[in-house]
Amino acid sequence: MLLALSESLGKLSQTGQKPKRTIKIAHWDAEEQGVLGSTEWVEQFRDELNAKGVAYFNADGAVTGRNFGAESSPSLKGLAINTTKSIPFPDSSKSVFDVWLGTRTTPEPPLGNLGGGSDHIAFYTHVGIPSWGGGTGGHSIYHSNFDSFAYYERFCDPTFKMGPLVEQVFGVMALRLANADVIPYDISRYGTDLHTHFEGLQKLTKAYDKSATPFSFDALIKAADDLKKSW
Image (cartoon, rainbow, N blue to C red; front, side, top):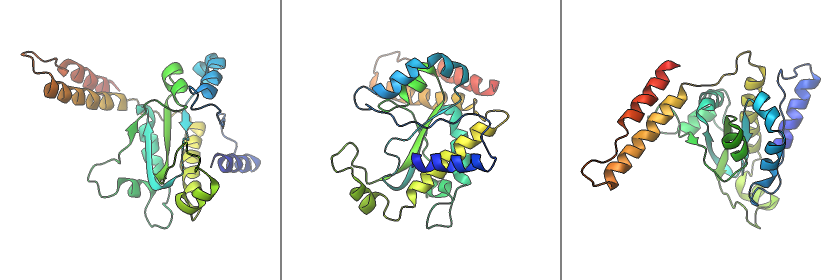
Protein backbone atom coordinates (compact mmCIF):
# COMPACT_ATOMS: atom_id res chain seq x y z
CA MET A 1 0.00 0.00 0.00
CA LEU A 2 2.76 2.46 0.94
CA LEU A 3 4.81 1.57 -2.14
CA ALA A 4 1.77 2.17 -4.34
CA LEU A 5 1.18 5.50 -2.59
CA SER A 6 4.80 6.47 -3.21
CA GLU A 7 4.36 5.67 -6.89
CA SER A 8 1.13 7.66 -7.13
CA LEU A 9 2.66 10.73 -5.47
CA GLY A 10 5.66 10.42 -7.77
CA LYS A 11 3.43 10.41 -10.85
CA LEU A 12 1.63 13.52 -9.60
CA SER A 13 4.96 15.30 -9.16
CA GLN A 14 6.03 14.32 -12.68
CA THR A 15 2.90 15.99 -14.08
CA GLY A 16 3.66 19.21 -12.22
CA GLN A 17 1.40 18.54 -9.23
CA LYS A 18 4.07 18.48 -6.57
CA PRO A 19 2.75 18.87 -3.00
CA LYS A 20 3.38 22.25 -1.39
CA ARG A 21 4.61 20.54 1.78
CA THR A 22 6.96 17.57 2.00
CA ILE A 23 5.40 14.12 2.35
CA LYS A 24 7.75 11.49 3.78
CA ILE A 25 6.96 7.76 3.57
CA ALA A 26 8.80 5.42 5.94
CA HIS A 27 8.93 1.71 6.71
CA TRP A 28 9.90 1.24 10.36
CA ASP A 29 11.99 -1.59 11.77
CA ALA A 30 11.81 -3.09 15.30
CA GLU A 31 8.19 -2.18 16.00
CA GLU A 32 7.69 -4.99 18.50
CA GLN A 33 11.10 -4.49 20.05
CA GLY A 34 10.08 -1.42 22.02
CA VAL A 35 8.98 0.55 18.93
CA LEU A 36 12.66 1.31 18.48
CA GLY A 37 12.84 2.14 14.77
CA SER A 38 10.38 5.02 14.70
CA THR A 39 11.30 6.21 18.19
CA GLU A 40 15.01 6.52 17.38
CA TRP A 41 14.16 8.42 14.19
CA VAL A 42 11.88 10.84 16.05
CA GLU A 43 14.51 11.42 18.73
CA GLN A 44 17.16 12.11 16.08
CA PHE A 45 15.01 14.62 14.20
CA ARG A 46 13.03 15.93 17.17
CA ASP A 47 13.91 19.62 16.70
CA GLU A 48 13.03 19.60 13.01
CA LEU A 49 9.79 17.72 13.66
CA ASN A 50 8.87 20.18 16.40
CA ALA A 51 9.37 23.05 13.97
CA LYS A 52 7.88 21.58 10.79
CA GLY A 53 5.88 18.42 11.53
CA VAL A 54 2.23 18.76 10.47
CA ALA A 55 0.84 15.23 10.90
CA TYR A 56 1.81 11.59 11.16
CA PHE A 57 -0.18 8.76 9.55
CA ASN A 58 0.30 5.23 10.86
CA ALA A 59 -0.30 2.12 8.74
CA ASP A 60 -0.08 -0.90 11.05
CA GLY A 61 -1.75 -3.98 9.58
CA ALA A 62 -3.58 -1.60 7.27
CA VAL A 63 -5.24 -4.12 4.94
CA THR A 64 -6.59 -7.34 6.45
CA GLY A 65 -10.23 -7.40 5.30
CA ARG A 66 -13.12 -5.23 4.13
CA ASN A 67 -14.13 -3.50 7.38
CA PHE A 68 -12.86 0.08 7.39
CA GLY A 69 -11.84 1.62 10.71
CA ALA A 70 -9.63 4.37 12.06
CA GLU A 71 -8.36 6.10 15.19
CA SER A 72 -7.05 9.61 15.48
CA SER A 73 -5.95 12.52 17.59
CA PRO A 74 -8.82 15.03 17.88
CA SER A 75 -7.47 17.61 15.44
CA LEU A 76 -7.40 15.18 12.49
CA LYS A 77 -10.81 13.58 13.02
CA GLY A 78 -12.70 16.08 10.89
CA LEU A 79 -10.23 15.65 8.03
CA ALA A 80 -10.49 11.86 8.22
CA ILE A 81 -14.28 11.87 8.20
CA ASN A 82 -14.57 14.38 5.34
CA THR A 83 -12.00 12.49 3.27
CA THR A 84 -13.86 9.19 3.51
CA LYS A 85 -16.99 10.90 2.20
CA SER A 86 -15.22 11.59 -1.11
CA ILE A 87 -13.83 8.08 -1.75
CA PRO A 88 -15.99 5.28 -3.22
CA PHE A 89 -16.02 1.89 -1.50
CA PRO A 90 -15.13 -1.01 -3.84
CA ASP A 91 -17.99 -3.08 -5.29
CA SER A 92 -20.50 -0.59 -3.92
CA SER A 93 -22.33 2.60 -4.84
CA LYS A 94 -21.55 3.97 -1.38
CA SER A 95 -18.66 6.02 -0.08
CA VAL A 96 -16.16 4.74 2.46
CA PHE A 97 -17.91 6.97 5.00
CA ASP A 98 -21.31 5.37 4.28
CA VAL A 99 -19.99 1.83 4.64
CA TRP A 100 -18.04 2.81 7.76
CA LEU A 101 -21.15 4.36 9.31
CA GLY A 102 -23.23 1.30 8.47
CA THR A 103 -26.67 1.17 10.07
CA ARG A 104 -25.76 3.50 12.95
CA THR A 105 -27.97 6.51 13.56
CA THR A 106 -25.09 8.60 14.88
CA PRO A 107 -23.75 11.50 12.79
CA GLU A 108 -20.27 9.95 12.72
CA PRO A 109 -18.81 6.45 12.36
CA PRO A 110 -16.84 4.94 15.28
CA LEU A 111 -13.61 6.92 14.90
CA GLY A 112 -11.47 5.89 17.87
CA ASN A 113 -8.76 7.56 19.91
CA LEU A 114 -5.07 6.74 19.64
CA GLY A 115 -3.65 4.48 22.32
CA GLY A 116 -0.26 2.84 22.61
CA GLY A 117 1.44 -0.08 20.95
CA SER A 118 2.39 1.22 17.52
CA ASP A 119 4.70 3.61 15.69
CA HIS A 120 2.66 6.75 16.26
CA ILE A 121 3.76 6.80 19.91
CA ALA A 122 6.93 8.88 19.55
CA PHE A 123 5.35 11.31 17.09
CA TYR A 124 2.17 11.84 19.08
CA THR A 125 3.12 11.50 22.75
CA HIS A 126 6.75 12.66 22.63
CA VAL A 127 6.80 15.41 20.00
CA GLY A 128 3.08 16.20 20.00
CA ILE A 129 2.44 15.81 16.28
CA PRO A 130 -1.25 15.19 15.42
CA SER A 131 -1.53 11.56 14.35
CA TRP A 132 -3.96 9.23 12.62
CA GLY A 133 -4.12 5.55 11.76
CA GLY A 134 -6.58 3.62 9.66
CA GLY A 135 -7.21 0.72 7.34
CA THR A 136 -9.44 -2.25 6.63
CA GLY A 137 -9.69 -5.25 8.94
CA GLY A 138 -11.45 -8.54 9.35
CA HIS A 139 -8.92 -11.34 8.87
CA SER A 140 -5.85 -10.24 10.77
CA ILE A 141 -3.25 -12.73 11.90
CA TYR A 142 -1.09 -9.89 13.14
CA HIS A 143 2.52 -10.81 13.99
CA SER A 144 1.96 -14.44 13.09
CA ASN A 145 4.17 -16.73 11.03
CA PHE A 146 1.10 -17.19 8.83
CA ASP A 147 1.10 -13.49 7.92
CA SER A 148 2.16 -14.15 4.33
CA PHE A 149 1.27 -13.05 0.83
CA ALA A 150 -0.63 -16.31 0.32
CA TYR A 151 -2.81 -15.58 3.36
CA TYR A 152 -3.31 -11.98 2.23
CA GLU A 153 -4.37 -13.07 -1.26
CA ARG A 154 -6.73 -15.78 0.01
CA PHE A 155 -8.37 -14.06 2.99
CA CYS A 156 -7.46 -10.38 3.45
CA ASP A 157 -7.89 -8.89 -0.02
CA PRO A 158 -8.74 -11.53 -2.66
CA THR A 159 -9.84 -8.91 -5.20
CA PHE A 160 -6.87 -6.62 -4.47
CA LYS A 161 -9.22 -3.67 -4.15
CA MET A 162 -8.88 -2.85 -0.46
CA GLY A 163 -5.20 -1.95 -0.68
CA PRO A 164 -5.90 0.74 -3.29
CA LEU A 165 -8.82 1.95 -1.14
CA VAL A 166 -6.56 2.47 1.88
CA GLU A 167 -3.95 4.07 -0.39
CA GLN A 168 -6.59 6.55 -1.57
CA VAL A 169 -7.64 7.47 1.97
CA PHE A 170 -4.05 7.99 3.09
CA GLY A 171 -3.13 9.82 -0.11
CA VAL A 172 -6.08 12.23 -0.20
CA MET A 173 -5.69 13.06 3.49
CA ALA A 174 -1.96 13.66 3.03
CA LEU A 175 -2.46 15.86 -0.02
CA ARG A 176 -5.17 17.92 1.66
CA LEU A 177 -2.78 18.62 4.52
CA ALA A 178 0.16 19.23 2.21
CA ASN A 179 -1.58 21.63 -0.17
CA ALA A 180 -3.83 23.61 2.17
CA ASP A 181 -3.01 27.27 2.69
CA VAL A 182 -4.36 26.88 6.23
CA ILE A 183 -3.79 23.43 7.74
CA PRO A 184 -7.26 21.90 8.30
CA TYR A 185 -6.91 21.02 11.96
CA ASP A 186 -10.17 20.57 13.89
CA ILE A 187 -9.03 22.22 17.13
CA SER A 188 -12.50 22.46 18.67
CA ARG A 189 -12.67 18.68 18.62
CA TYR A 190 -10.39 18.62 21.67
CA GLY A 191 -13.20 20.07 23.77
CA THR A 192 -15.69 17.55 22.37
CA ASP A 193 -13.43 14.57 23.03
CA LEU A 194 -12.41 15.74 26.48
CA HIS A 195 -16.09 16.13 27.41
CA THR A 196 -16.71 12.52 26.31
CA HIS A 197 -13.69 11.22 28.25
CA PHE A 198 -14.63 13.06 31.45
CA GLU A 199 -18.24 11.90 31.23
CA GLY A 200 -17.01 8.34 30.87
CA LEU A 201 -14.79 8.69 33.92
CA GLN A 202 -17.70 10.22 35.82
CA LYS A 203 -19.84 7.14 35.11
CA LEU A 204 -17.05 4.79 36.17
CA THR A 205 -16.52 6.74 39.37
CA LYS A 206 -20.21 6.59 40.27
CA ALA A 207 -20.28 2.85 39.55
CA TYR A 208 -17.25 1.93 41.66
CA ASP A 209 -16.81 4.70 44.23
CA LYS A 210 -19.40 4.05 46.96
CA SER A 211 -18.10 6.71 49.33
CA ALA A 212 -20.35 9.44 50.66
CA THR A 213 -18.67 12.10 48.51
CA PRO A 214 -17.48 10.49 45.27
CA PHE A 215 -15.10 12.49 43.07
CA SER A 216 -16.91 14.78 40.65
CA PHE A 217 -15.78 15.56 37.12
CA ASP A 218 -18.31 18.38 36.70
CA ALA A 219 -15.67 21.11 36.78
CA LEU A 220 -13.55 19.31 34.19
CA ILE A 221 -16.58 18.72 31.96
CA LYS A 222 -17.40 22.43 32.12
CA ALA A 223 -13.78 23.30 31.32
CA ALA A 224 -13.92 21.02 28.26
CA ASP A 225 -17.11 22.72 27.10
CA ASP A 226 -15.52 26.15 27.58
CA LEU A 227 -12.50 25.00 25.57
CA LYS A 228 -14.76 23.99 22.69
CA LYS A 229 -16.55 27.34 22.76
CA SER A 230 -13.26 29.24 22.72
CA TRP A 231 -12.46 27.82 19.28
